[in-house]
Image (cartoon, rainbow, N blue to C red; front, side, top):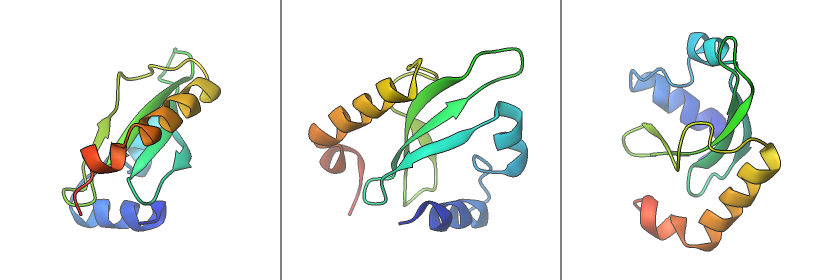
Length: 99
């Protein structure tokens, strides 16, 4: 599933994670997206805070977004990308995605 497709489905499901207001409030950017697993990297910069990176997963059935690890667990995009690669190598497709 593409990121655009997920955003549309999430909105139709009445969710708001990708809503313009939410993305703007947290100054959220999506940096990586894996369309097979829904695993992606975001960066957020809350008001009066520093930009941090979070590894997440979109659930293609419930249209929910969950964190893999903690919010802002990575100080750099590079570290988040390393964590994403490790999760993928460890079989996140089997553990976290229903077919």
